[in-house]
Image 1: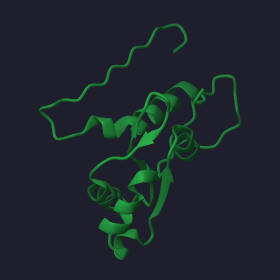
Image 2 (image 1 turned 30 degrees about the horizontal axis):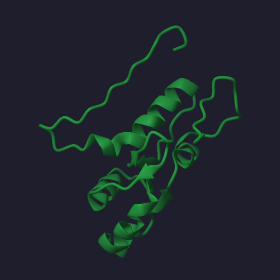
Image 3 (image 1 turned 135 degrees about the horizontal axis):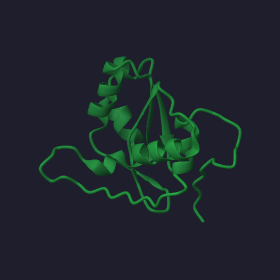
Image 4 (image 1 turned 135 degrees about the vertical axis):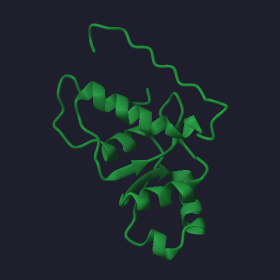
Length: 130
């Protein structure tokens, strides 16, 4: 990666029902994993929009996204902290049982949860709000 310039452009495809902004934290986790060499946990799902400063913003469709994770036997989900009320209001006790929801406000929280632990190395990527 160090010998080439990278440009990533993400735009919403208005002909699709997929809301690409909800993929913000997932895309940053994937890029951080690729650049740092730290694998992403295989037992966790995530969704959330992010700002340029690394704040995690709320998303829509929480119920559908959590149900999709459950269908795929995922028991850990990362969601924006501001979506906590949707989990409480929209999901039944049966759906919430056996599910661990990690509520986050900042991208550094997402990276700590989503990437496998490793000791800091020279090529580890860290995000901070400076």
